[in-house]
Amino acid sequence: MSGSHRGGPRIVLIGPMGVGKTTVGEMLADRLGVAFRDTDADIVAAQGREIADIFVDEGEPYFRELERQAVRAAAEEHDGVLALGGGAILDESTRALLGAHPVVYLSMDVEEAVKRTGLNQARPLLAVNPRKQWRELMDARRHLYAEVARAVVATDGRTPEEVAQAVLDALELKEA
Image 1 (cartoon, rainbow, N blue to C red):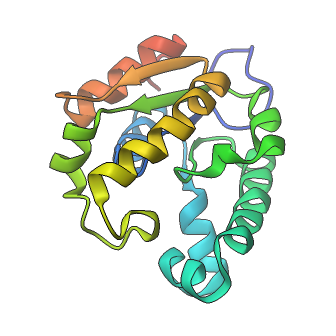
Image 2 (cartoon, one colour):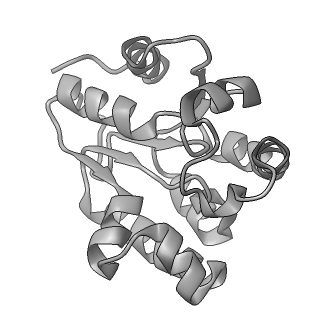
C-alpha cells in the first residue's frame, strides 16, 4: 500500500444508477485486497426497507438527508472501495467532502443505460418516461459528477473487468 494514502476510502465510485458501481466496486476491492461498501446498502440496512419505499413513504428530501449522513459516515470510517448512490452528489456538503477523496465518475450514455437496466426496474425517479427522465437526470447531474471526480471512466461497451482496470490505471493504483 502506498505511503501517500491518509485514511478514508482508497476509491470512491460515483455515477448514475445502473452504471455498475457495485459490480466494479466489488471487483476493485477484491483486486486491492480491501472491503467494499455501498451507501445505498448502508441506508437499506439501517432503515430496514428499500430505497424506493423510503422515497414513497417519506419523500426525496428525507432520503437525501439519510444519504448525506450515510456518505459522511462511510467517508470517515471506510478505508476500502466506496460506492455512492446516483444522487449523492446533489448535496453541496457531500460534494465538498468528496474533494478530499480519490473519486472516479463512471459514465455511460442513455443507450447503454437502456441496455443495462432496461430502465424499467424499481427506480423511483424513472417511473414515467424512463429515457426522457434518465436524460434529464443526467443533464442535471453530469456536471456535478465531473466537478468532484479526479478521473472519469466511460463504461460504454466495456466489461466490468475492463472498467475496473481503467479505474486502477486512472488513479495509478496497483493491485494487492
